[in-house]
Length: 390
Image (cartoon, rainbow, N blue to C red; front, side):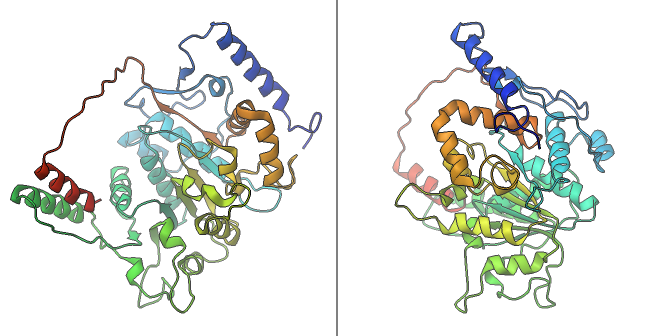
């Protein structure tokens, strides 16, 4: 890969764009336009997103690469209109990125940095459905809470993937403290509705033995295994870990999806001086190393807010072989010297190379008002019960 003054191709051009955007903002030429309306530039598949979406002015100045990947589920999506045009755009660029390999031999990954309201969950469901049609019938979906499993099931159903089973890693425990009768009835109705909408049995992996998931006794042969980061670092008294169990289920040639939802949970892999890396960060790094062909998706609205928090994102190829940085610490040192402007340049470079999207809801015309509402004692009891359901 050719370079100028040790920088990757195109970096100087991106830096000039960033400087120009900053100059226009300083001069007042883009007042009120820190964010720009977002629409897919090179794809015309799917309906418009139901809400107004924006991206930063610096990212809007950079065009993504030409889309070359042909979705197998494109016709289904066009007829069902289950995904918006910008969600389909994410599918295309993610799958396109997954066709590439890094210089170290590992499959390249994709970073979804969208904020709330863009529909990351349904986008992930679309990726699972596309890979299912490509013959990849296993997927690992790691997130922060087991209750999000119901959202995962709903998103898969919404795009037509009702045939894909979802296996959960934790058990739902129902607590019934003293509370009003109408709240108890409401809670039981909600739970019954959720349970009835799953279409498939919910398998609590933390109650299963640490043996092979695809054995006759367990019977998890394909589908989506949905687990929490806490489950990822769990282990039995005999020393067998859930991570080891998942790697065995996937197999050494596994090329399916490995989704790190709310991936900022692994941000403390590279701690401040004197600190120790967290077990979660180490586990996220290890499972990527043990599944080099996995199609990795990093998903978080705040995953790149601090350069230090990106240490586990090894599949982006921003440091290591074929780059200007020997390792992550070299990459981190360069970004810390460059400040916010350097991180902005990295984001622009990632978008230009087809490995990153970062959109958010527009707040144009929104007004905020703080209203203090005191809670009565009974309201607090009911609220505490509802929190136990989450």
